[in-house]
Each structure stands twice: as structure tokens, then as C-alpha cells.
Image (cartoon, rainbow, N blue to C red):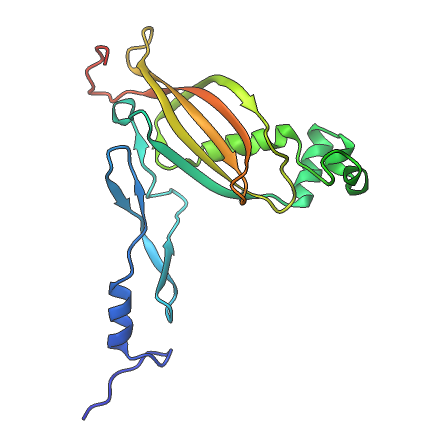
Length: 214
């Protein structure tokens, strides 16, 4: 009898391939309930674990036009991990308040420790906004309403952003643009909201779209 071929891990090749065939590729959801599979690569051949394979051009990014959006669809980005050094460096330059730059003084504050500046938290929100998946064909922002900083951001926090479409309407002055209002929630690893707001943005309409009101 010919012995079964084995991989460098000691596992029979046929067994390993059988396990890999049962691994489900991760996917991102679009507003229409469709899923676009991400490119994957093995993280650990022994366990057959896969992770999304990112590229510099983000080949898996979905850029949605105004016509492709629906009320209630969600986009997500993150996590963004925050270090003590980054909190202090940002605060020294933009918001030099003791509770953001001095650990001993911060321990005596109402927050009981070092916290990120509110402007730093908002800057992270802006950064993650540009990384949301699915991504929209955003032309420009119009502003933010009901901005709240509901919990302090501390060293070691990992922040995720979730955006939900609340309202869609075509622009009256720019027929090839659409106006989208969204609810934004920035949360830490404990799922505590640290920032929330309503954003209004212009999103491009399809070049071949009928520009009459929806």
C-alpha cells in the first residue's frame, strides 16, 4: 500500500484539503442584500483559518452611487487602536489640557485617568469615515448635527465606526447629486458609544441615471 502523502505539518494532504474546502470566505454586504466575497489567504495552515487579504488599492471596496442606497443600510470601519503616546502627542499640539497630557493630573480629574481630547476623538471618526465599507461615492460633506461625546476615550481603546442611512433625497440645485443623512456611532471595544452624530453628505448619482426626482 502506498502511504498517504503528508504536508509539512504532519497532516495528510487529503485531510487538510477537505478542511479547507469547508472554510467559508468572508464577505461584505451591500444595500441590496448581495454579498461580495473578499480575497482571502490562509493565516494558519494547520487550523485552516482565513483572513481578508487587504491591498493598497482596496480591491474589495464597493463604491455605491446614490441610486444604489436605501434607508437603513449600514457601513462599518475599524477598529482603530489608540495608544497613550498618541493621545499625549495629539493633545500637546491641539488641546494641551492636563487631563490629556499628564497621567498624574489626569488621575485626579473627574475621568480618573488619561483621556483623549474630544477633537482627537472626532478626528478618528473622520478618518474611519473614509474607510467605511460599503463605501459611497461621496462628493463632499455638508455638516454634522447632534454631535455628542458620550464616553471618554482612553489609552488602549479600539474604536469602530458604524454608519446608518436615515434619509435620501435628490438635490434640487444639482440634479446629478443626491443628499444623504446618516447616523454615526463610534464605539469602543466594550461596545460603549464614545461619539455619535448625524452627518449630511452629497453622494454622486450614476452618470446614466434618470435625474428626475425619485
